[in-house]
Length: 59
Image 1 (cartoon, rainbow, N blue to C red):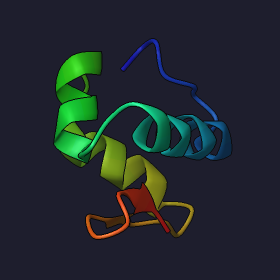
Image 2: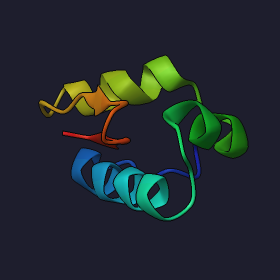
Image 3: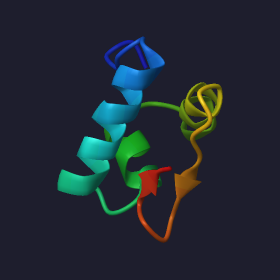
């Protein structure tokens, strides 16, 4: 996850943009970027966001 933004809010923006524009699922994004899904979710949970599969974004 070294290539991902370190700031949680920048990470949120980056991930939601990628999910909107390129990936149909969080799993697909994580596989392509080589990041751990649980770690990514944990980083965004710190700022109060969780992944919504129905909307394919963090809310």
